[in-house]
Length: 441
Image: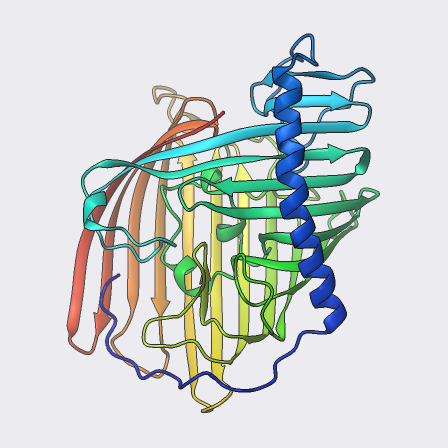
């Protein structure tokens, strides 16, 4: 990470008797433990049933994935047990209302620099100027026994840890209840799967503001579907401890997100307008999170701390404003963030502000001679790590190209970034080049 100057830590760990309501902690932790046990056995049973030949023939190929993946619908279940491989889903098994799938994804990446402000994992010298496996994951889930019950699990082979294990109960077409561990719906950039991003990696904003994966329980409801007043509301009670860390005492976080769809169509969590939509889709969202936590930042590595801070008892408050749009191969997304951290022992306060704007377009929509699979993307991001300090801005300027071989499931991405950071000792500038192949199977 670029040097950002020395900061005094907020202080030692506070001894406050933090507590999340006991019933909430029990439900969240118990459900998570159950899912960690059940999901691997369910996926293993699915694999065994396919190998054993329980399905006589593969179902017709489809480009749609299970409803366990956000924004993607599942096919209707078959009365007789069926299984096999379907492009766009992976290994599948259907029996009655049960509709399960099992797939995987890998990212191979070339990186020219160790300067990474936007990564959960830090790049080491051995990663530089070589093609390495950035991500390798096994995931699966689907409808189990009844159509209103969705299970989803995702395992990280590189980090050797469970990323997601969750159960979603769907009540009609408008209300969802969820428990387990997942990426909390705070910001679009983080909720977007790394396999459905528009550039090789997320912006520098993600490092400072993401709420990331948490244990918790959630409800989401959609009102006025198809109208100009089409909105979705999320309310989530989260552990506040980060990924795979739910057994410790914590008051936890309360997250709310209100998302408006001005065009009356739900906006998917994914980058690029690969579908070249003839009808515009857009969204405007406002999110708020507050509570107590020991972490000043979150990532796929779990509970972490911003530069210069130590683990303590923090009172956290964050606000985010977001817009997004897709139409005829053009896409836009933008976020503005405010974050306040107050050390409950010392009373010290740090405020962080930042945001990014990103747009992309398929050149063939503007020029008939351009290749159909080629997309051009540009992004600008800015973070002020401490509003009380001067000359500490972080900036990112990125240009990228995508070549979609088979949509987001098989694509090549190339981006070039100019990264700038200031601190009390001066200004640091560096150029970064990244090339990535992302494939799902």
